[in-house]
Amino acid sequence: MFNVSHIIYIIVSLAVTAGALTGFHYIKNQRWKDFVLKTCALLTFVLHISIMWVDFFTTGEAMAFDNILLPVYFCNLCMYLFMVVAFMPNKHGRAFRILATFLAYGAFFGGMITLFASEYLMNDPYMESYETVKSLFSHSVMMLGCLYLFVGGYVKIGVANIIPFLGGMIASLALGIVINLLYYVFDLGDRNAMYLQGTAMEGVEFLNGYFIGGLILVLVFAFVVIFEQFAKKKGERWYNKSFKEFLAEI
Image (tube, rainbow, N blue to C red; front, side, top):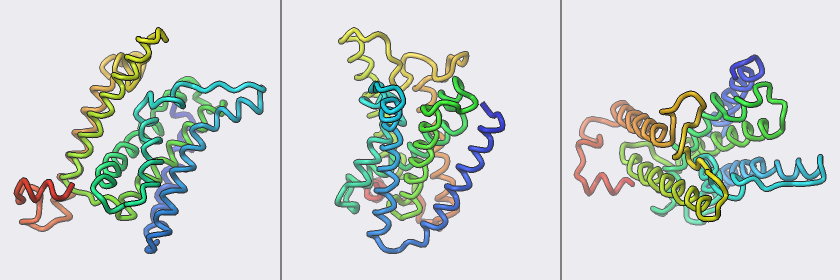
């Protein structure tokens, strides 16, 4: 990792993301906003499953990997959830706000972690396999689309965001436990779903799903608290509101 090709990809990916979000910021028509969101969701999903098509047309055979069939990892969950959120017909209801809030923060961190410390890059540092390339591209598009949830006004940043995000992280934990249990029940061997049974990076034993999830929660909370300090006037911040007013923002 962090060779010339990796560094170039990081720079290009972040530059394209920043440029695209700047341009998307000027979209005012809701139909076109939804179009951007849906396009990013579809492209993310197609890139994610495209490895099957590439394998078939290059070898004559295709294998469905478990992280395509199941949301084995956090980013897999975000990719599938992105499709659900983008195509929800009612984008003004509480269900959408809760899912979109979790997705916006989760996909950002998932995308950034993959951009800088992809498991595929550890095994393929020069990005020679399509599997590595499609992983980077799909995460970059997912991060762009989910950051647009903020830029497009779908998600309003505030301390109340921590509630749906915490709920989403607990759901991710439960999902990981269920998938690991399914592997055990059907005698499919050990599966480190959501990195609950081992480290995400060889040699760094503490870097498991519990630690990563806890760290992300702390970072999200710190971000929204700092954001409100600068973006909201005195008397309008989270600690000035009643519990009922606070929950109403979720």
